[in-house]
Structure formats: C-alpha cells, structure tokens
Image (tube, rainbow, N blue to C red):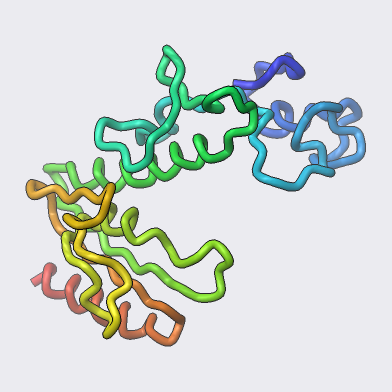
Length: 199
C-alpha cells in the first residue's frame, strides 16, 4: 500500500507511517523525508498511500454493488488515488463512506439476530455543514423524509439522489437535530421506538 520511499513490510503503524531513523516518537524531528506524515504536515493529502483494500478488516466493502459514492479502483479492486492526481483525498473519503454504509447493510442482513439501525444527526457550528442525511437515511434504512422538524431538513429517501432503502430489511429511524437543544427529544423518540420493539 505504501509508495516507494518505504521498504517496510512490518504490520506496525509507527514503523510503516513514520519510519523514524532514530527511534524517536512519531511526528518527531527525524521522521523520514518525503513522508507526508513527517510531523510538519497538515492537510488531507493521502499521498503516503497508493491504494486502500476493497474491504476493511471487518469485511465492509469500500465499493459494494450498492455503493453510496462512486470510487476509482484498479484492476485488483483496490481503492486508488483516482485519476491522474496523486492526492485524491475524495476517492478515499468516498470509500470510507461506502464502508460505513455497507456495515449497516451487512448488519441488517443478519437473519439470525434481527438488527435495526437508529441514527441521530446533530447540526451545529460545523464549517462543513450538517451530517449527511442521505448516508444516515441509508444506514437506518429509513424511507421517510424529516418527520421531526417543523421545517423539514431532508426529503423522503425515494426522492433523494443516491438514497436507497431495502424492503426486505428492518427499517430503523433517522432523526436530524439541528442543535443540541433538540437532542433530548430525538433520544426520547428513538428510545420509545426501541422499547416498543422489545415488547
């Protein structure tokens, strides 16, 4: 997975990423030249990695057939840097979103232990905006639009590009709380639904 500047094959995070020549701590002054994680680096450039595997260690797929986000892969199915850019953070990020969504899909596919997924998205002062309602709708397998705010923040899944629900899987609930003031109500709503399922 690592570019040419590393020759390490050890399954050790510090050895692989930092490659300190003097045994100093990660982010120390002697980290290998050319490594983006050399202690002075700040940003979202994953140039130290050439690709990510098609599945994470738990078996969640980064590019499943029902993928939420489009990713670029190589002939082996690895999630690559994408295009001609050696710094395509977006491709890796999309793969992570897909794995997150896929983990909920796989959990709901369990026929031995029924699984419902409930999600709360908290708004606030984030500079990147509120949480992704389509991802959270997909994870909860919630076909409904925003039923909990007087001004709806998102539409029904069927009318959202990229949103999928599965009729053969249990349907949970996604609630968006614009601020922390609405969290108590969101938790009470979900807890009443969970108690009803347990009866």
